[in-house]
Amino acid sequence: VQEPKPGAPPKQWAIGKTGAVHHVAELRWSPTRALLGYSLINAQPHHHWLGVIDPGQPQLRELHNSVQHFIDYTWAPDGETMLLQLDDEDAWAIFKLDRAGITYRTAPGGWRPDWCRCD
Image (cartoon, rainbow, N blue to C red; front, side, top):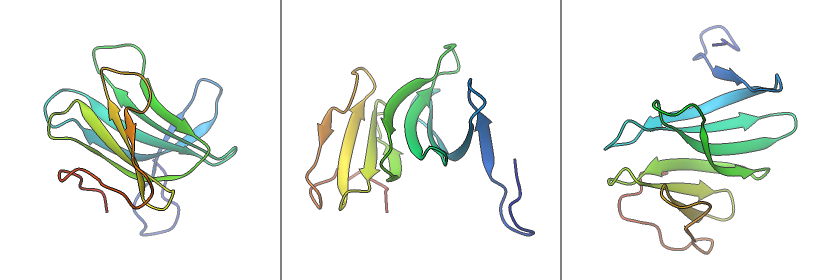
């Protein structure tokens, strides 16, 4: 944990296997299971990750790995689906935890599920 400026909220950091320092942007629990969603940002080189931590498994599960910035993510009420707001004119990507990669991607400015809590 680091305090960048006096009085500012602390930031969380993670050290990768190579020694790279990643800013832990968000941690959010699944609404139905013991799964922790995470987003990491690496400044040099610029990179963003979205993934899931299962406390019963030894490895993190990476869902999205991109040099493009993404804005926010949220869990679906079922706890099996994650919605990622991409920094691409309000495009959205949906990830189902039982599948690899993006399950569905909307066009910029398009539809998003009613349960989305992304701003």
